[in-house]
Length: 126
Image 1: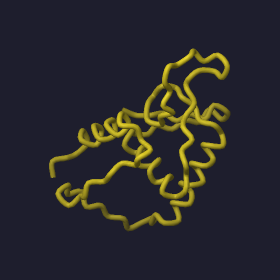
Image 2: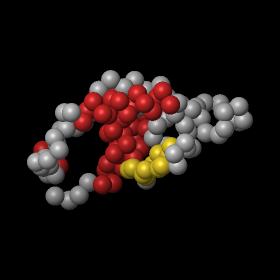
Image 3: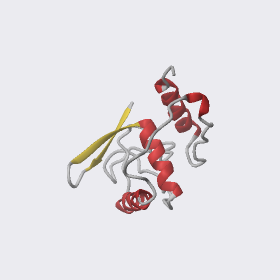
Image 4: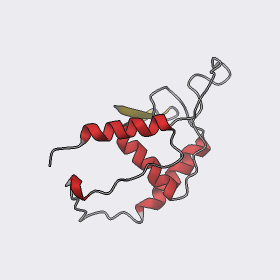
């Protein structure tokens, strides 16, 4: 499944896999981003009452984030770029050498399951 991130003000959008987006959020958190949670879908003031809104970042429900939140996320990812090499990165795709990677605690159990299911579906037979 892909997630589409849209900037309503500029009409720019980008699509990412759930796995990529989950790892990007985890990277941002390790560089200082503190998730505030998303806002439920629908126009402000006209939202239908929702029993429980989890503030998830990993579903395609039409949720929104505040400008402050988007800038905080972008700043954390920009900081991470200084520590990521531009070239010469070689990946060992042999799964038997991979160490289990725990997902961040701030993800809900459902979000963790979605990421793990997606990762299981993309493993190759090496």
